[in-house]
Image (cartoon, rainbow, N blue to C red; front, top):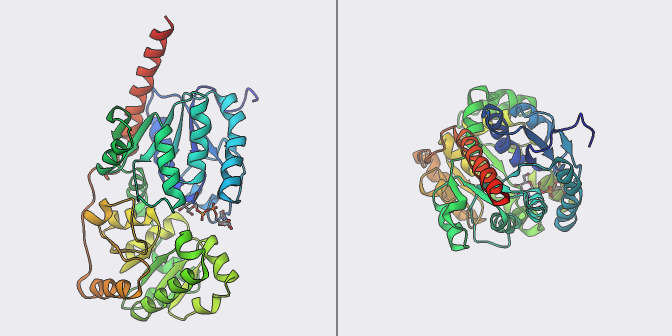
Length: 389
Ligand code: UD1
């Protein structure tokens, strides 16, 4: 690597896909503010690459340009994971980082953790210990394996430590730090784009003016959108919801591609459903904060709606984020039309669950992590020096 490139011995911070960006942005800021930590080097695997899925969020979140982009792009799970592994290896060799920080549960998270651990580079996993106990979910496999090989695990809710203990991961590796995704939300909340602006830009101004308010839908999990029957059922549910409340639905590229591939565009076309392109962070924040309710299968959206005190209906049979159900505004409704409509009606009649913001979802999780990591790296240096002496 050229001498003008990123410094050796820094903190290699890995992002790959959209939900990583809102977690890494506060960490990068907190690392820079902690004088005893080495410099952060931001590495993007390129798993997400579209402007709407990528550059726009970097800009909204104030993330710096990545120092390195591996440009892996889309592929099957095997090929995508393997490409990240192949391309990160020489980068880690050149950088010899003090540690690697991975966030969340996407393919890039596991791929980099696996390469780093075999090189003896400490792996730090932020958002560790979440479990849906559903191994059919690719993210669940990524979570379990990443946690097994991580040296230091930062958790977002107390139940995570129990999940980790059951898998043989001792408390000395685990630190309850809070939720960095909510750091981003609280930091940017006041700058959120007004929904009227977002909807007008998408040609859906009428939605913002509807006195009943509107619902926001996001669906992209393979279980809901990769199979024509499941996607057909999902669309039918959204149409029913739209009879009660007009719907703003930013379509994930995976979902849009499948709607077209399965010939379902007509079923998705309805004057009460505004199909939007993927939104920026500030636009999405504005839409969610103003929504009467949100129907989703996203992990992050379950947390964000809890922090915003907006009722959330999760179209999944399980969640790896149970605190959003126990303390927040989340209700698991599955892909069951009657179930969804019963909860929608309840929300419209009563306002739905208000919930409370969970412990340590306070906007300071990244600062806690930076402080703790500085101590951990210093202690590790001391014990390595003693071992050599
Ligand atoms: C990935 C994560 C998922 C996360 C989601 C957020 C894994 C296993 N999944 O799923 O946990 O919730 O990101 O979006 O890592 N595509 C584009 N442009 C892009 C990226 C993707 O058009 O910038 C399309 C491609 O057709 C691609 C498909 O979306 O094949 C799926 O992308 P991929 O990265 O494989 O997974 P996601 O469904 O985005």
